[in-house]
Length: 509
Image 1 (cartoon, helix red, strand yellow):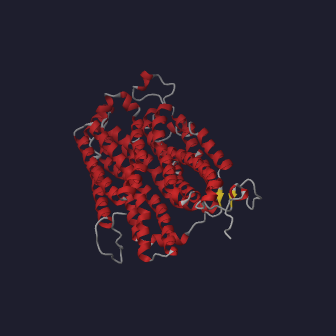
Image 2: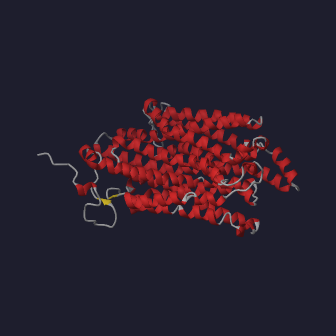
Image 3: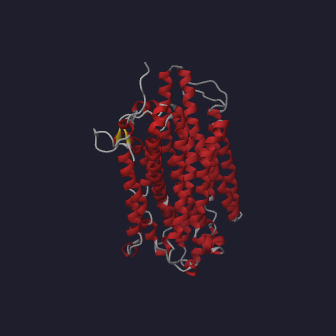
């Protein structure tokens, strides 16, 4: 007799059963059972996905907030050198990348509902610090060193928003069946990435609300930096309450430490993580840094275009939007021609576009430079999708070579899931490395400007060193070529297996 698998009300509705634990816990969840899925599982999964996307979206918006704030500190009387300003954009990136590691294990430990509520609530800290501390007269009256330390501390808290991605992806992966997991995770990731674009589009407009248009075209001009923090408070409140009141936790969402240990021993886990540094690291690193690079690289162009100069952070919106949209497209293309081929093409294209960006800097052509970076964002976004697509294919191949039994396939499927978490955490460090490279390249220009004795002299010296970024750009170009070579050597070139790195080359990767 076939057992009845129809989901009972208490199996899928956490409010209709006696709670063994406090909160909305679901003790039985089997989305791969079509009858269970159609009988109510889909509805619950979609509700949790929608709330997860919203919370993650706000997290990404907070994460990149200081890339916009840093451009406007001069308007509130806080003068920092270019190299010092890069710390304010690099620290949130670094903190967010680091937090992705513990956030990955938080959902199995605390439950998706509780952790989403807590991680969303943490976003109140950077928003309120920005609203209260940064525009205050107290900070404006402090010494330069004190100002820098306080600003760095405030900026670092924005990194809370960067960790949300890992816990959000881990949580949603448990809710969806294998046949829908790719689409659900793609929506979750894209919804979060779009938070970068939304922040860069809206914040520059919000901070000049009430400022006359004629005044905005003057440098420096009045800005309301407090608004850059206050505008997120209602949205953070909605995300926090929505998660607490309407999300669920799954008892089956248990961490599989054995799979993480096994995955960490696989050389391909670290190879793919390096590739993800080049794709996602480029997306988030340039999202943080590009407006600041443009400001210090094309001062003469911005002087003749006051609207672009005022709304400079809004230019980052274009790149972040392109990259966010390209991510699922890269995964779709990888399904058809192979993830390794798409990733190789992305890295080669990013190297060529970086060369064009260098030409734009050397020829003082803003249009050439910005056009090149639009292409880089497109290819980085597509590479995000194709690189993630490679991971299950690589580990499926490794599993087939180990054995074709169900237990082996399941073991390597779990290892692939672990590598997705590992690569997501390591890839985010790529954004910090990009900003660190820009900061190091800017040191000479910063020192030269600091040595100038008058404001007019500082403007002249800054213009003479406007090509400071080319050193970093050459380093990025070389890195993309190395990653392209790695992709070809490990995943496309036919070669015998070795004990160090087993060959998995093939069109399916």
